[in-house]
Image (tube, rainbow, N blue to C red; front, side, top):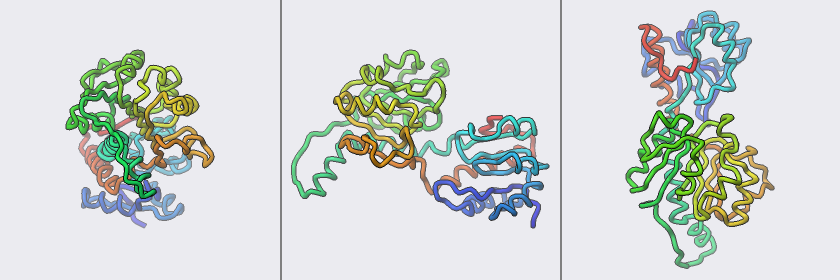
Length: 315
């Protein structure tokens, strides 16, 4: 067994092999020893030597064995599942994958908005039924799109919306930080935004402040023609309130990559609506995931050597 500088744990992301991660890291760090632990035994044998460990989780037992660990590079944007106190006590820096999902998830959002505006679902139904029948559609230009969350995904979405001639409203926890939207409001002013919204995009983390942020009161404020796109977390939306709004025609359409509960049970009423599209939490899938993640981790490996700033550090 080698004594690796960087150890990649045997944790696949979006069905992509960790070997792809290793290849991308070796391209960026040709002088570093990059190892992939293929079995639990290899993880236990290799982790005492590594300065950097990458994966989506590390358990307390593995952390105790990581005698030389300086950085745990989490493969997810969220880090709430990690033993953060133990990592901090051990003096281990923690980084996340923030920014990796900007291009791919923002493309998903644009696809969802265009699909619903042009009513491609109806076109698909007509094609399946061999029905040649004209139907009305809408356009994005001149509409107002509200994006809740101004992180990498929210900002990438705004950037891509710019070409469509829409007005944008950003909603974030700290509106004083501003953002790329035409206007930025705080959560306390969300109804002001919802009252003017044609399309609502949820791109925020699930926190105490955002849990069931879009509830029955929010659906009352939204236009009955509004489209909801949720690529945040299912819990940001009150599912019962969404179902009620759909049944009452109080919302135009919903495009959901995340749901509450998740996975969505086969007998859940959300499946039955013609104006709802559901994908299985895979808006973030991209074959370029490990390429983008490797850019961050490789730069941070070099920063450890030179004493530079660590990108995406959360601890």
